[in-house]
Image (tube, rainbow, N blue to C red; front, side):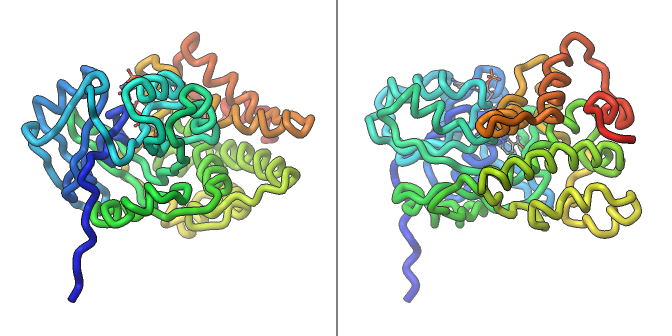
Length: 343
Ligand SMILES: NC(=O)c1ccc[n+]([C@@H]2O[C@H](COP(=O)([O-])OP(=O)(O)OC[C@H]3O[C@@H](n4cnc5c(N)ncnc54)[C@H](OP(=O)(O)O)[C@@H]3O)[C@@H](O)[C@H]2O)c1
């Protein structure tokens, strides 16, 4: 007889109830896990008014009423989570880590669901008593309306192998979030970072992801950012993992194809909701700090660690940082000129 695997009884705590935190936490709660959300007043007020709606590009829609949500603006006293999901933007990592450490017992496992490579080391430096684990979210989540979080692309979650995550594997599976565990997540994180190099291209373009990817000029910008990163990774002996449909070194070749051919071949890459945008686009629109330092900045640091430079990624950092002075969407030709790419 099949005995269902018991779910953890202590709650999962979401630190940073935004797009990723609400989506992941909501899926886990819908699967029967107790979940505690810690977030900002704006997001929590919307959840109190509308409840939490989760939808995805496969047409699924679920709703959790406000009355079943456990929402806190600050860390609740005495909470003993079996697992914490860290889902703040990279710039907020150190603060969030300090806040968690002040409230949680030493050794509490915290998995970073953030983009970039440095979040767990930043968090560990700020709060060495907690157990920091790296994670990777491959799909895009956007807040379509207050309290409604929509997954607009596909992919399988990944994280560093650890007993705490093994204990939650069945719950994640039941939540429709199967979790691949890896002895070393570095290669997976680099694989994801290469894809995330599209975030600044998308943000500066002012266009939805799908429309931006249908413009060869923007794809050439992304291909140039990726090629520069891939060369540095090869020199460093790091083989980035395949996170998308193609091995990472083939993606720039695909991106550089003429659009009719690209459209034919890149069917999986283009399986994106027509309205989906990168979260950096929203950051620029709302005048919030971006994660450019955790993306192109990481490539610049990789170059520096080898006594080299990464001029194309460095120029992209400068372009994103200059946006507040001139918040005007950039056409693909202008972007190629600004990155100093050949015509
Ligand atoms: N969205 C995506 O599609 C996606 C996909 C994969 C990975 N990721 C990664 O996931 C991470 C989160 O992204 P997101 O798009 O979910 O960001 P988000 O929507 O901005 O959510 C983060 C939330 O956490 C809040 N927060 C920050 N510090 C806090 C603290 N100390 N206590 C309570 N709340 C706090 C933020 O408030 P403030 O705005 O006031 O700081 C914000 O409401 C990022 O690293 C991102 O790169 C995102």
